[in-house]
Image 1 (tube, rainbow, N blue to C red):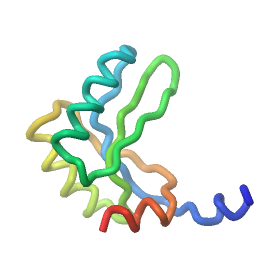
Image 2: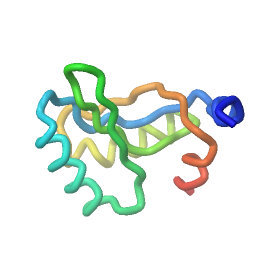
Image 3: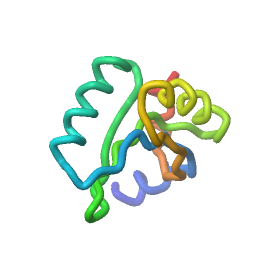
Image 4: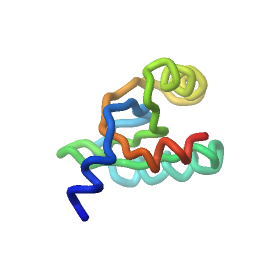
Length: 94
């Protein structure tokens, strides 16, 4: 089963909204994000010491750029990150 899940991963892009060492700040921004962008998937990863809030799942950099532009008006320091994304995540974006 795990092997199957791995095979469903493809290289893609996410938009990093926030990197912080403060978990409370992460949760506050994540809540704000979900209110403002209910249709955009958002998740976070913990790479010590940082909590990184990431939005979307895109196959191409161009698609991710569009979201980055939109979010850049509200969030400071938004940038694109490469990540392995599952095809299921991609489907949710459309």
